[in-house]
Amino acid sequence: MNKLSIGPNTRVTLNFSLKLEDGSVIDSNFDQPAVSFVIGDGSLLAGFENKLLGLEAGQSGSFLVLPEQSFGQPNPSNLQEFDRDSFAADVELKPGLVMSFADASQSELPGVVKTFSEDKVMIDFNHPLAGRNIVFDVAIAAVEPAEIH
Image (spheres, rainbow, N blue to C red):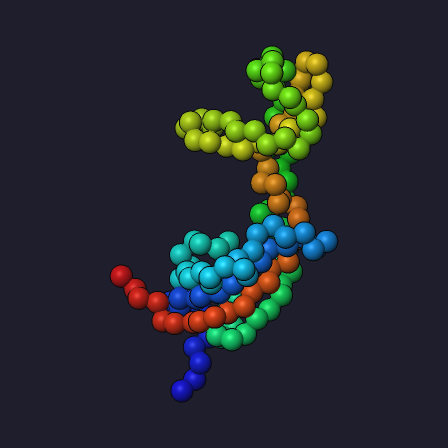
């Protein structure tokens, strides 16, 4: 019997890690039970999913995923300047500080302090991994036909 390879209508069970090119781990489940998802269900960005296509249970791989295939390039429109007095006086601002903001629909939106002065604060609303190459390591535990409902 032929092994099923990862493709449309397959359920994949795997362990993974996401790392920066310098080896810094962003996320990993190699020290935890494998996770399962169905190809195309939105659990993974398409750029990561595409790297899995054709792999079979028992295989592993390490793939470089470019920004255009993952979190995109930084968008200058996602930098916004606020008046310093928009922030509570007791907030200790520093570059890299992640803060929570409400978007137009009142959903939570994270922003990162880029720069600040006595009068102004520059907040970056780009994804923190925008513009970064990601190393995607995977170990495929199982590939099964997905149940289509």
